[in-house]
Length: 71
Image 1 (cartoon, rainbow, N blue to C red):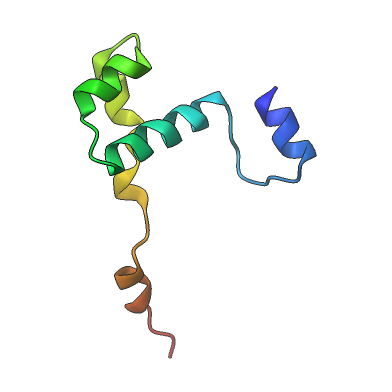
Image 2: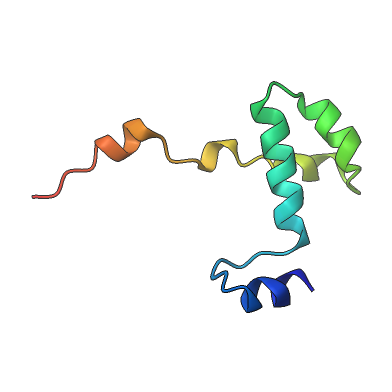
C-alpha cells in the first residue's frame, strides 16, 4: 500500500513501511536516544535488527560536499 501510494504521488525512491521504521529509529538516535530503548520501542524479532535501521552513518555532511572538486 505504501509503495503504491508513493508511486502515485510521484515519489521515485523505493519506500515501504520499513522506511518509516528506519526514519523513526534514526531520528530517535540522532536526538540522543539509546539503541537499547529504540530496540524496545521497535520490538523487532531479533535485537540485531534494530541496528540495521540505524541510518546515521548514511548522511552526507556539508564537509563531504565541500570536498568535491570539479576540474
